[in-house]
Image (cartoon, rainbow, N blue to C red; front, side, top):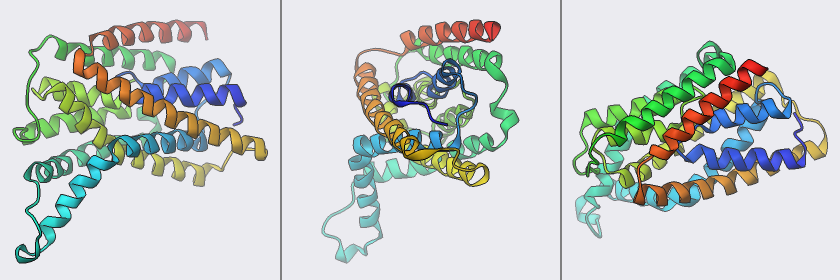
Length: 278
């Protein structure tokens, strides 16, 4: 699938920005492909998007993740050989991440079942509308102040389920996870960074599934120009992803996600109109 230069730039940029905002990045990609006159996203195109997103995540969250891994490594050193004690808060974050990640990954493995994640634009519109409800409900609750020091196993399961249901293309991974976190009383700004860390293994899994799709279905690309366009998608997805992360963090510091819920309602209506027309 060769999109052309302008479409490749637009596709990568929109994919990157929408993936980390609490709106469905996959839904936006589906709609863009509809307007471009294509069918489903190919494995190679999806892989380029996910590689760009992974690069943006590692740039923004890499230091924090490396810090957690360093503290974990110190814990493995015998007590008499340690230069310092490990940071208990980072060790606690490691423990919480290990509790949540399996729920997120298991849910997203259902993407191998095409009957689970397909259904056309009509089903996509319903999923986006459901996502708007997920975003809306925490805004009616008092904002909590939990972080890794007082998160419970039930909180971890709740966030993990939020990531798991993002296998549905109308559900945003960041939107669902942060909303489930907020409903559990976790501070919004902490929830955003915690869920961004969860996005690293989730994006890695999605990249592996893309590779599996390429192996089974072929590269579906023609010519050197097509290769460069795929790289353009990856680069613009990286730039859009970095921008999306910065917007999300600043937004979470000042406000809830009610406006994104309204946007999702509008997107659902727009998707349904496209479904009727097409």
